[in-house]
Image (cartoon, rainbow, N blue to C red):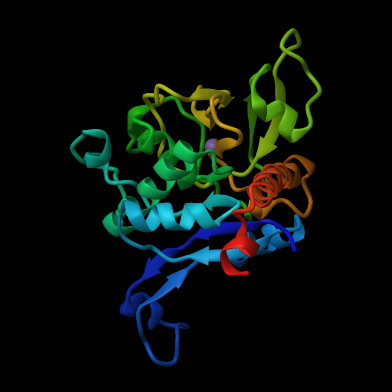
Length: 271
Ligand code: MN
């Protein structure tokens, strides 16, 4: 059995769940793209979908049981979380999901749980650790390239420079050492927000040509990495995307072995 990987899900209201093409009997529900689950399973993990919960204690309880965590894509973060007022261009906000995922991210960062942030997920990691966001790239950075593509999810539309000497080039397979130039990879792009002020404990590991931060990592942590693109949309045809999930699973596997080695793993708890 592979490592247990939690994947955060969003909420669906009764109306969203019961809209055209929705459930037969409209009722509140949860949403996660099937591609996240497929990517984890293909990489050898057990995928557990995490509905939005409540409170730091609930988050810590999940983090204790998981071997790895994916913070998935979704709506905008409430700018109150980084001390700003909302500006025009801010999109839909889900305060309950915000609070839950920030608590999960803080618990994961505090206890060394391997975590991969995807799109909204990299933003959650940065905000949870004390950073801020551009609420709307087009308004904040007038010279920016198009970061919300109209092409299919599997199609990479822009390039990012992977910064030498960080974790990310080792993960995605660029062999360039610190003395070599940046490796460029092509990524898909479905975001209108981006990291602005970087969290003190984080460093940037990829940027787009317009300077928009595309990946962030936490050097003091075994594996805490966030990417602004959607590798779950491209893992079946793109090697760097597949390697992102493989790296999460490898780190989660190390954690699972460590837990069992201490006699406090799942078997010990339930056996
Ligand atoms: Mn982008």
